[in-house]
Length: 333
Image (tube, rainbow, N blue to C red; front, side, top):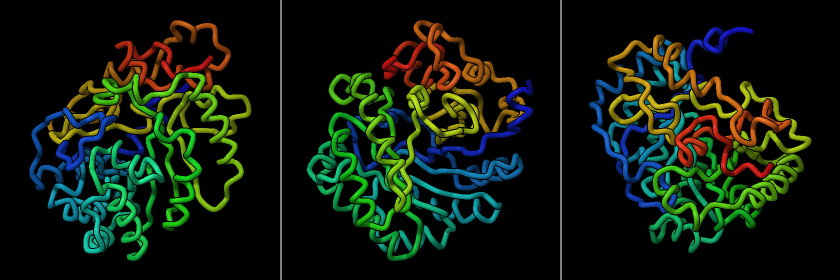
């Protein structure tokens, strides 16, 4: 069998946190209590050069809130000029019509807006910001006005798992092309508040059975999930490029200081993009190789679905047990 790094010489996507600064203080945020030095525009462009040289096709700016950095548009323009496909995720507060026009001019391929409920009060409470829902919907309308592709991201939790269809309707009403129903991560504040916000394994199973049925019956918008534990459901028909978690395989995360982590939810530094040899990190990092070669521990050892899901979400297993190979705590089997 070919080695993983013989098949992929670099990740397909870098999820890039330019800044941990944010104007919100969400109860589930993985990064709100993180801190890291921010690099200059020139240093960021040097990292763009490296990613272009390594032929990484996609970068997605997250955070923190990307729009808190005034040079976001310049960085995106430079990345686009180097052939990278640029996208971002935003809470929408700073994304008015003028910002939408600048994002389009900078070459963004799509912009994702986080909306966790069709109920404005619920969303505002979840995001700890009065008026957040109105500004987020306004951001979707601004993107639609300038003709920039929008996506909608909702973190599934106890506040919305029984009402996700209303989120889909909200997306339809605002011309959204794709909706991401994200699984709840147990990192940062999400770890602290998981007892209040997270679902039980059986509730996750019921949610995914229903949501997959809706996805299969929906043709007007695209519905996406990012949870490898779904692969254990009978009849799951997706054929992903890799089994299990994609982090450390198809994607990596960049911190504001250039440090590389497997994903934003796993706070283990692989190396630094500016100061270390990327090819060596990608191929030889013991952290990445441990994620790519998980062992079937605990109940995974006797599970017939292990080859499909590879233990579920590696970040969630690590956050709750400190071990990549332990079973995902969301697993219902």
